[in-house]
Image (cartoon, rainbow, N blue to C red; front, top):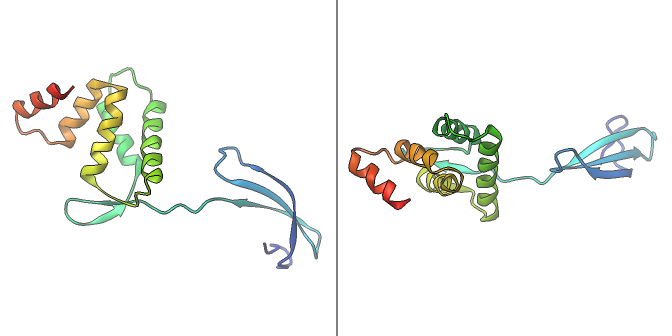
Length: 147
């Protein structure tokens, strides 16, 4: 690790511990040349997830879009914002564990619905009505019968 002060390549680690969110390792180092101390953070490099849109376009996975959609579906329900965030983080972890780096909007929507069904059935139906773009009451009834 290069010293930020004298650019020497040699340093020793004085202390290592996880950072506050436990997603990186904080290391306190000392340069072996100038003896100044500095802090580095070591984090696993994550592969970005691409979402394949119906138009054929690809865009980066944006969990905030899912949070916004779920927030609308969960309006006036007894569901907290933290629960919605946890649900989306769980979906992200599911995809990472399955090594999914590209996913279609249809597959992503199905994963969201599967997770939302366990949290709240009314929110599930609200989200499904927008996501599945129900054209008539029969489509709505078919989805309700699945519950």
